Image 1 (cartoon, rainbow, N blue to C red):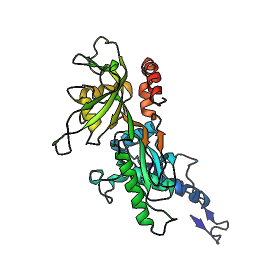
Image 2 (image 1 turned 180 degrees about the horizontal axis):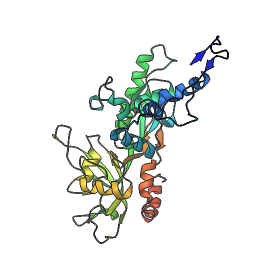
Image 3 (image 1 turned 45 degrees about the vertical axis):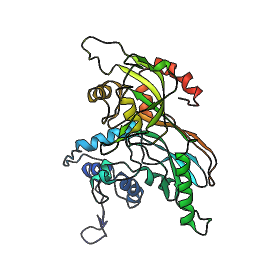
Length: 357
């Protein structure tokens, strides 16, 4: 409040009342980007943000759902921006964090729904657009709970007279290249199991092809679903008195799908033949095991321990050969620190596959 000098107040008034903690808390939770943008302007206007004395103000209780979102973002160190792994003239590959959707869909709420702002992190499509300053098209997708390398085509070509036609051609060419037999997507999965199942020793089997029908979104079985697997290393924790037998086993598995069916890798690994459900998989895994891993070994909520660690795409008329690796994300590294001997087993085998962890 500013009052110019007058007969009653010869020196005038210039008094600032700092923003109350409850208002700042609301901004930090619901609109942190707005607060960050506003801070320098508020200071420039002489508006106090930090009080120099104690004030009694009402308490603002942050909803439990928002606390979960804040905790998840802290674990991921997610700032809402896209980390670019590789960029060319016509494509870009970004590193997708877990629990971030590739793009919004009907189940992530409508655009006008206020829940979308705080419950769903910014989708990858928007992050990559903001980071590159260009519109992009998705070439493939990753499940919300998964992570890793995600390929986009630029949706515009400023050097072309017909940019829309050119961008469609680039997108089509990259999609066809991704679907060709020369493309390879190598996933790393952390699974519930010790490498043995129904008498089969998968740890000593090397690479093998698994061809088994999977169910689509509507429960219909789809034939011709092939995935190459290699079981890398396993660890079984000792059984302590009073502990359940569940949640003591972990196996690192590499997967290379030949076809792209719904939850193909997840359904194959959890099948009665392989018996190694991916940790965190609430759709095809074991709920009790997942709860134990969250409690004991830092498994993040809504996380499926599946990571696209290496992406290889053959050349097209618009792009050269692509071979890019995505580093293990912080949450998986934190889980694996519990098992240093497991990583010692895995590193030399992974290195032979061109994967450094």
